[in-house]
Image (tube, rainbow, N blue to C red; front, side):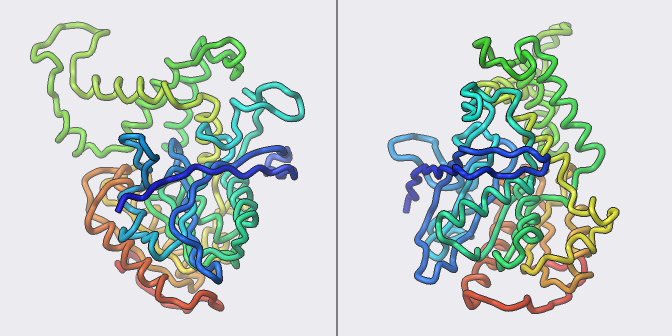
Length: 390
């Protein structure tokens, strides 16, 4: 059965206070829903997206070929997150370029396009905005919040900001904060964008140009980190584009170069430069333990949800070790935790792909959620050893 997606939007007039001390009003959130909300409104699952994704999580748009949602392998009728059982909500974050209010929209306070003046947003700000969306939908408590990578950070933050509003958190290929190396990759990508002559300090809209050169490089840098060395060697190795060395320093020689340039060109045609800066900075800032002097166990003490954490052996950007940190901190707090470490060759991108073991783990966990009572008290403590697999 093909799942048909229908984009929606919700407008908010009341100001949203941001962590920076700024606020934003008159904003809109784009979202999609799949499945049916049950009578007691207890079967809702919120999906949080990563850097360059959106609210279009699953299904296809009518009459549009190749319009599958970015997690269509995971969500839909009969799939691991079964829309015959769950009411799934995909929401596009503030500052994005896929429908929610972002830098390319008009600031109601000035009547001009935000551009570089769009306020800095954090993971916590996104969660607060998502909570307002749920209020508008009349949903008091979620069966689960789920996300991969940056989406996993949002799922974790939900358990701390609104511990009573969700029963489960599914955190995939994520981390409690970025390492210095990850921040460094983000900074290289941002510098590529801001030093592009067409960037114009973030106000390129007024000049009718797009900093495509910077966006291309940013995407190329990012894409390298999403793949494993094994996958790149298997797909491309040292294959030459034309079979022979051309002895040139500027033209494409290797197939991997051609692939990266293709990814960069495609990305620069649809993604907004200011959005890239905002989202990577939100990644950099996220750190629940910053208020507990780096003690993650203390930082996660407020969580009341049950957890599934999933990592992938070849993911070096969000390594399994980072997931184990969260597992340990949660077990130290006697939370109910299941952990799966999937042996997959695809690097960080594995969380988006159709790996049978991975999908089976998620399916089993959501079957457990579906079989539980709608409203629960404090989670049952089930101390599992770090690295235990569901």
